[in-house]
Image (cartoon, rainbow, N blue to C red; front, top):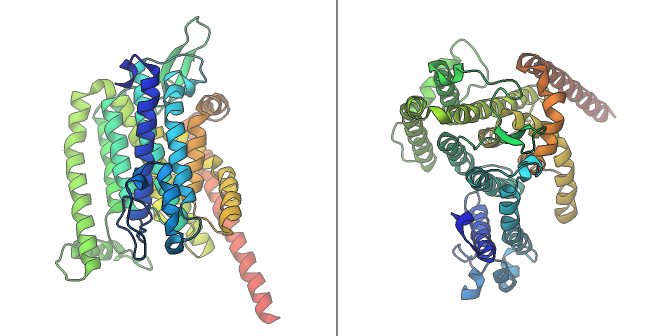
Length: 429
């Protein structure tokens, strides 16, 4: 592992090289994973009218100065964002590594064990890379592909099942000379219970996992719900398996096969994990609770907002994105991320308007920037929220959350009525 390298200069050089490779992958994925395919990355096939690639084009950061020659094909400023992305990762990845290893997540109040620091570093690096890709594609095309969120969620669950220290940390005691670091559980800051390690916890995890698969499974929702709506939806899920020549049918059938395989593998492996990895159950169960809570929260807001406004208030990609983030960071962090998202949205909207003059923006970048902020300032955020929010207990907290959702629906409905009334007056005049 990197921490076994005796020379810190070699560590920095290795991490710098890895940062360049990761950033090059992010730029390539941004080009190829969206609905529309772009070809400005040096790792993509050149677009029509572009000059042939040069060996220097593949060098991170430096190569983009040479790729400026394609400005007539992709636009005069196409190269700036990928260049800045690679520069951020080349510089930021070594800094992020030493920040994690020295206890940045706990405000440098204690130094974690090397194994803990490395687990946090690799897991959070994967999450941040996926959020970069989701943000850029959402900015460009107003969508978040399942290619990002589905593998990302699975990766988060696998890491949580293999490493008990993967959950976000807190300082257990600051009164001792050597403060101890503990990982948050799904009950934090309350004491952990033992029922999640039993078959009950396994069944809850299987239920959350099955709902997640069902939500991603291709199907047709009825325009209006009636007694036969579930039959209609079930029939649409079965019809997908029929062989049809159209490309869209082949795409949905491939998606149905993939999600079915994921579900079958999941229901086979989850009971095995509960039996064979008892020391990691707290981490794995916390990941499932984070997945279910974060996805459910955004899904409810999407449904409430769509009905209250009479139009789609949030894309389903935002639901799967938040579920992925909750898998990595847990439900407590997911709640804080959603609370801080409007403030992050203000920053993103202003920056996007300055550079593109576009005042409309999808919700995904808000969630990603808020997630990054909560992660980097986790020590301060949790120190404030532990006693100020989560100490009231989960039942009271969920009650307040449900009341907030109801008030949110009422507010949106009033806004809708005001807009309709204003539109009617404009039509009359």
